[in-house]
Amino acid sequence: MSNTVKYSTEKAYREFVSEIVSLVHTHRTHAVKAVQTFSNQLYWNIGELILLKQAEFGWGKSVVEQLSKDLTHEMGTGISWSPRNLWFMRQLVSEYSILNQPDSEFEKVNQLGSEIGNVKQLVSEVPWKHNILILQKVKDIKARIFYLQATVKNRYSRSVLLHQIKAEAYGNYLLNPSQHNFGTALPEHVREQTQESIKSVYMLDFLDINKPVSERELEHSMVEKVKRLMLELGYGFCFIGNQYRLTLGEKEYFIDLMFYHRILKCLVAVELKVTEFEPEFVGKLDFYLQLVDEQLKQPDDKPSIGILLVPDKDHLEVEYALRTATKPIGVAQYTLHKQLPKELKGKLPSANDFKQIFTDLKRK
Image (tube, rainbow, N blue to C red):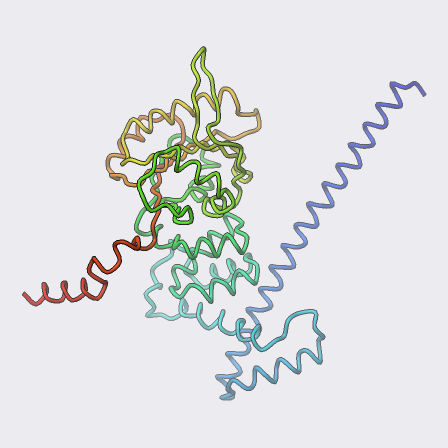
């Protein structure tokens, strides 16, 4: 056998082995997801049985303690039969079952997937510890459904999910609907996933900035704490660099922050502003994205997208500015403070003071 033939055969064999390894990894991933789904469906059914039998026979809390001991004896410890875990199974069904009540406020609401069947499916697709976290940290039923959906769509890790809850992502979702031009600038098959991956408000309070800063200082602070920044941006963002250099002819341009999104399969350019939104910000980012697509985008990448972060914006002005952009751009606000700076504490009316003021106004 000639060296050329031998090399060709060896190369083909290595590719053959690589293909099988990839196939095994894919099937393992599907197997893990299938086990998770069946496990969560089992937990749901056990929770239903506990509720049913308690109602039928008037059993109290002690039955769960006894059930824990008996299941461990009968089935072993392969699954956690602890009283705590059994109570979570019961709580899961009990608290989501409000969606089944005929006079529930959710009877006619379906935009968040509020029917019990849809919720049960969401629960089965979310890791068990994620489900427990949502039950513990979130009390509003619509907010719970929001975080379940976000976890499924964005593949949140538990730490990212916890961060989203602490950052009040649901409240921001309601108060600040995201503004973008993805409907006209992106192909239909990637539009929805992109919209779900870009938030309307980013909480940057972890930067510990309590005074006015320049855009470069803000960027430097974000790069210094890039791990926390990645948690706030969400799952899938991979940091490429800051002040990312692009050229056109003899001119140079610099993008504040450059990322690659593993799920969306595209480059993401982030521009930071420390002043209120101006329409020209969109034009500049649109221009940068044209350069990114021409110079950096690979043949199998999706269209690059831009995120413009501003401290404040007029929604109507943003809407009009986005109409002229040819590239997909999302405009989002960021906040640097969740609490009042120390020097202002005690110098402004409290929540109770405002409540009293509004009460007095209503009386007049």
